[in-house]
Length: 87
Image 1: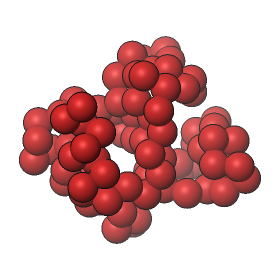
Image 2: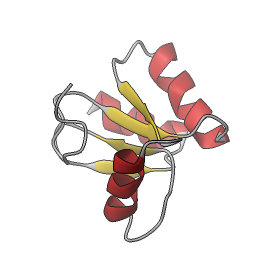
Image 3: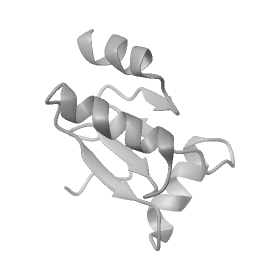
């Protein structure tokens, strides 16, 4: 996938870390609802980390989830994910 670091990816992209509880919750949501997404880990990935920091006004907040329509959810609840993916 060549459009990982844009605000209009061709599929949902979740920028995450391995130990983040919010990231694990979002992963569980996508898997429970059979929603395709691409997970990009920040560990050792300078380009992903810089992209997330740029999107979040200087903060490395995860998960940062970018949707093909250009919208971004940061640390979303299960309900926020449900509303976004059912729209």
